[in-house]
Length: 314
Image 1 (cartoon, rainbow, N blue to C red):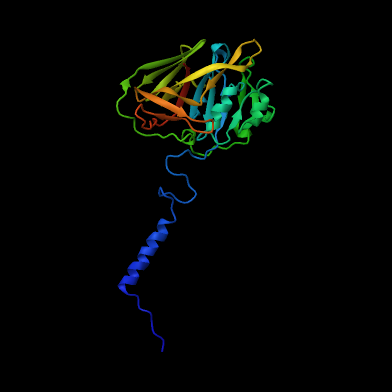
Image 2 (image 1 turned 120 degrees about the vertical axis):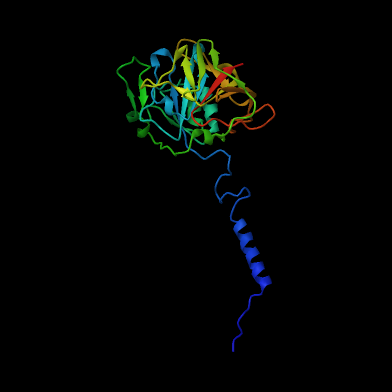
């Protein structure tokens, strides 16, 4: 006659503890599932970056309002140019598209092999673009994706149809790809109505609109508009104090191309919710994300919506 095994209360308790320990071992140390990034880290997101014209004949730009991030950079003759970064939402048309610069290659190292759409580049810069950890998509690589608009003169009339290049939006924003977060404002701050960043031949102004909960953008003194005529605005603006130095490149008119140093550290000003917050930025290497913190070292979160980052020369 067989004897049935009887589980004692102590044995049952031991089995339950083993199950708890096994379940705990199936998650990472921060409680996330295996193979997922810890909460708050940079997301593995493929982004599309498009170099955008920013002189008067190029305005209003098309598709700029749907960018997750817009960078404002200084280029030749003290003018400004934009780098629009998309991930969560990509418009059917973006432009006018202009040429890439050396500064873009270092800036874009923060993203995981981004797609860069641009009209071209100086021949001396092309080898550096080919070596850079990005997927370059100029018109020569995707001629069917670009077209010339009839209402403007060249070179201010080249537009991109993103659906015709090898890129698909992932539904996660480019802000998260940088390891930044949306969240409550830090304590303190001072009321701020308007802020202007000046380049030698260009200026960008952000004016707070409580009605729209946005910093409305003005370019060279004129209110910026979408191609549909709506005001262009940002939820958060970061004015990042950077070194801008001459580079080894120039344009056909003999003007030197400035190089904006985005690796290093310095001061910043974060504009959100009608207030200005003093901040610090730090990026220890080209492969690292840029971190923004309060002067006492606490992370600064962003207001939900488009982010504009302006590189203000020291």
